[in-house]
Image 1 (cartoon, rainbow, N blue to C red):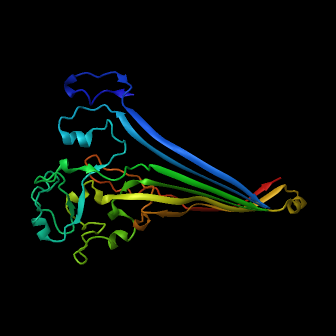
Image 2 (tube, rainbow, N blue to C red):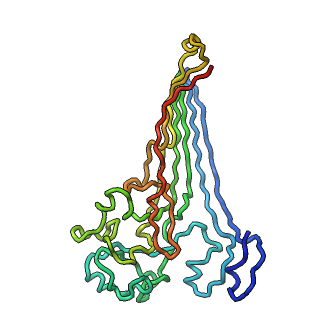
Length: 306
């Protein structure tokens, strides 16, 4: 529920009643398969699931856009809910000649005259072919910030008194907007642009660069996929013929852990694949690598049943 605001001009001069606004269509499917195998004293259980889901705005309370670029970039009705809008990039400037010879200016991007641009700053593409790069050159970038595919695998095996359990989870089909210059490792230092390396494909632009380097763009969009060993445990249950001698029905010794292993397309950047994604309200990219991280834990225990 909400009040209708965007589809009426501010000059309407009254507050409308609360009503059911906006409609989202979420579509998807889930598949689950499992098997149980017994071979002698060994029992093995294996199950796996995979889910695909995505949401689209069927209706969103918004004005009618007369400008085709405003309509393309801002209209939500009929669009996926997790679209990311930003600029397309073409690496980094290698020299002052590259800046001078750029056949367009960065109009309304904080630098109308190129005076603040230096080698090592981001090159933004002029997608509509005019003589300026401005908001009209923005495009849909990335694959959406929400994973389209989520999957998991659960395996357990038991043999005599031994038991082991593994739970894997993962996701793919999404992208994350991450400012790698804020990664809390030496990665940003080793992969930044410098005058010495002059790497036009460096993952981090020059330090203290132009304000235009902070614009939301595909420069900071990274395709993400991962698989994580979420939970693992191994235990041993002592034979009852031993434990009953000391008046105990069941004794189980175990060791378990969480988040023990992660394989990800973002691991080489020192970034967790479940890092939140987002861009600021003014189009500035938000560094979201500093968040409460996934905790790796190990625990040991002894279960007693009397």
